[in-house]
Image 1 (cartoon, rainbow, N blue to C red):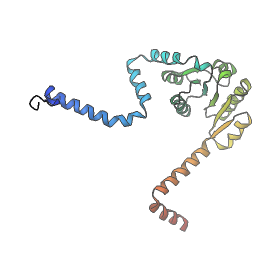
Image 2: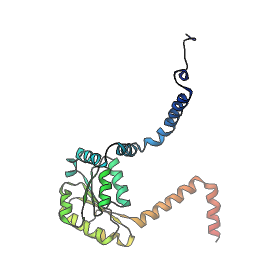
Image 3: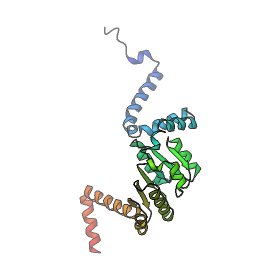
Image 4: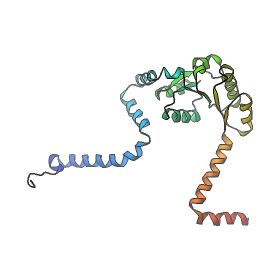
Length: 220
């Protein structure tokens, strides 16, 4: 039996065996890194193989019925809106994007989302997005006046829908509540809290370095 046993390398040429070994090791190394982002990585790979328009149509048609009821309407697909949409998508929440920039609408469609080119301050656009069947409306535009108009219009068309709004500056947060927003993310306050917690976590992790630093600061 020992004489008949053959090593894996004996079945392959030396260079092929080295290549196969390298691929296995690389796979073992990359698997933990890719697991958390598997959906996005898979989507990128598929996009290389399948034409973008065909892929987008397939993904949108897969949940087209869901987007007329129980979906979330996201107004604004800039940096903040994109991050919000991807989180909702990862949580399997159907999203309908409203955006005035056609290029950003195409980006949302390529990610498999329903997307409409239109102004969210217009009632007809919100109705086209089926606001009457939406679970929530997210206003992610940075301009306060535009955000106020969207919140007001959304509440006028669907008084019971939950409206989440973004306030770029603290002084304007109350204005969004006044026109009907149910929850406002105050960017300045959120950034301040995040900075504070980041410092606290750093000092807790390095108490020996943090104490002298605080001591020197108090001596000033």
